Image 1 (cartoon, rainbow, N blue to C red):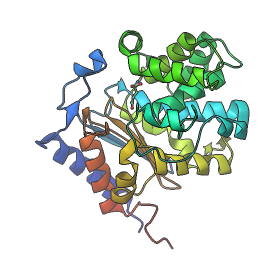
Image 2: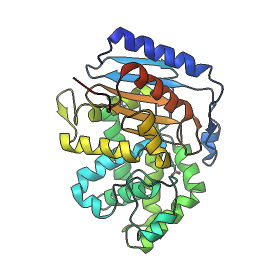
Image 3: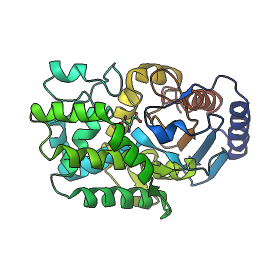
Length: 313
Ligand code: GLU
């Protein structure tokens, strides 16, 4: 179903209006102290169509902590660094457990289920540090997202990074546990410092949707190739199957788009060949995914027919 540009503008505005006054907003994450300060009444949405048209509404210009959405960019960089060798150290299966679960790591010998759970992303950081110093890896990430978004204003929120360092005991446990299995090669402190800085990237919905365009465009943006078409397809497949922790099946069922959420309340979703979408609302559901963000995406696909499971042609 092709939905005219003007209709998308209306749909986006109406979704933002509905979410603005929605009563059940989920619960803002409190385990990272600065995130607990973010007002639950925020909602932003940005939709970037294949031709570059931007439709945005609500708090689409307000930066938020992208948290685990950074795992998509970290995966892209780690695949760029070591290619398919990565899959010796990280799996490609949905975890069915919480984003910071340690249980599976024991039975699966320190190999995280997928790159989008915390343990998996910590391994991605270790892979990047196989070739770079932490400062260089953080710089590489920052340059990468700035270039993808075409926006040099994107920055890392040092307050969030520091708070995660001070409170990230579960992540420390995950990293040390994997170190014991030989699946973290570098210094655990440096790996975690890099991971926390990635999570602390602050972006707004428009910047995030801009940064996701390469996944909408088969690996390229405006003639510039970021990754191969095959790699873009595979990253999208992982986002569809693993992008929402133990809520991934439900997200695929309700929304049917590759997506990645973060505990800051953001979700990046991709309708391949059609649109790159970012939504943000800080209140989370019990699995740690934005409650209204998911609802907004559900409304969007219902009204546009953008689910990848929608018959085309
Ligand atoms: N920085 C967060 C953590 O490591 C990321 C979690 C998330 O966004 O899912 O716990």
